[in-house]
Amino acid sequence: MDELQTFREEIDRIDQEMLALFSERMAIVSKIADYKMAKDMIVYDQNREDEVVNKNLGNCSNDEYKPYYKEVLDVILRVSKEYQKQLILRSTL
Image (cartoon, rainbow, N blue to C red):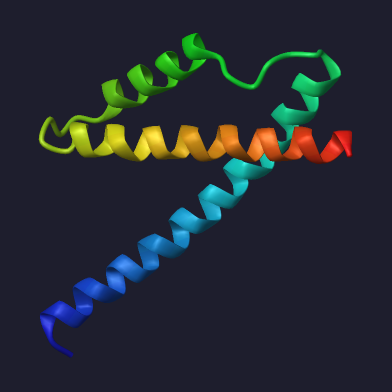
């Protein structure tokens, strides 16, 4: 097996792990949506988003990766909000 194929298999394994973690995260996002509906809270919380981004960027020890990791975090937060909105909207139908 050539080296490139080995790297690609490693990426595939990591992607599977990321999918499992993403699925776990979205299950918690669903619980958060339920909580926010019960407490009549809004989905968007800028302070919490800033906290999540800053904490995670602080944990990223490779400065070269930080701007890319911030993009990943921004997408995850956007997707999480959209999913919460969908769940809340669906509950009102």
